[in-house]
Amino acid sequence: MKKRPLIAVNMSMTVLNNREIHYLIDSYAERVWAAGGDPYLVPSLLHEGYSREMLGRVQGVLLSGGKDYPPSFYDQEPVPETDLTRLRPSFDMQFGKEALTGTLPILGICAGCQLLNILHGGQLLQHLPNANEAHRNGLYHQAAITEEGFMSRILSLKKGEQFTVNSFHHQAVTKEYLGKDLFISSLAFDGTVESIERPGERMVLGVQFHPERMDDIGPLYFAALVEEASKITL
Image (tube, rainbow, N blue to C red; front, top):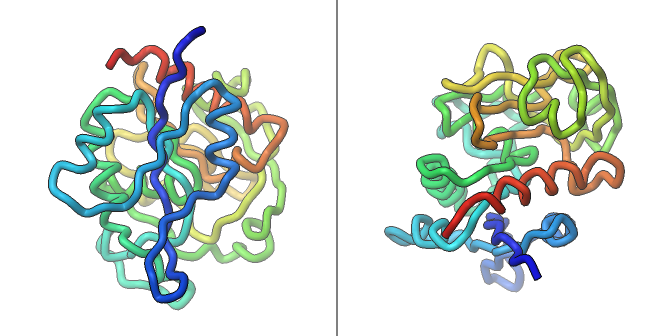
C-alpha cells in the first residue's frame, strides 16, 4: 500500500470553561484524508524551533481559514469591521514563514490565503464594501482565471475561463496590496482576488474561497496538494 503523505494543518483556538483549547473544523481533515493524505494537526505552541520541527515531519502544508489576522502584521490600523479576537495569531505567522523557507507544497484557504500574502510583505483590504451582499454567508459567485498556474491546472481551465466558488469572507488581498513574488491567478466577478500563487514548480497557492465546503471542485485542491506532497522525500 502506498504510504500517505503527512499534511500539516494549523489549528484555531478558542476559550471554553476558562481554558484555551485547540480545534479544527472537521472538513479540512476529512478532505485531506479523502485525497489520500494523512492530516497532521499542529497546535499553536509558541516555542523556539517548534514550527521547524513540526514541518520536518511532514510533506505538505494546509493553512486553514479562521478569524482575521491583526492589521499590525501588515502595518495598518484596524477598521471597525476587523475582528481582533483571533488567539495566538503570531504562531501562524511563525509557522507560515518557516513553511515558506522550505520546499513543501502549501495550500492556503481563506484566511490562509490572506496569511500567504502577509508573509510575502503584502497587505489586506480589511473590509470589502460589498462583503455582506456578495462575499459572506456562503454565497456562490462567478470567478475567472486571470493567469495560468496551479489554479488553472487544478480546474483544467485556461485564462479567461470561468468557474463558481463559495464565499465566506469580508477581507481580501487586492492588486494594490499584493505581496512580493506573488501573482493573481483568478478574480471574482467584482474584481476581488480569488487566488494568489508563487510562480514556479512548487505549489504555493492561496484561495479565498473554501474548497473544503464544496463537493464539486473542492476535492481537486486537496488532491493537488497531496499529489505534490507525495513528491517530497523525508
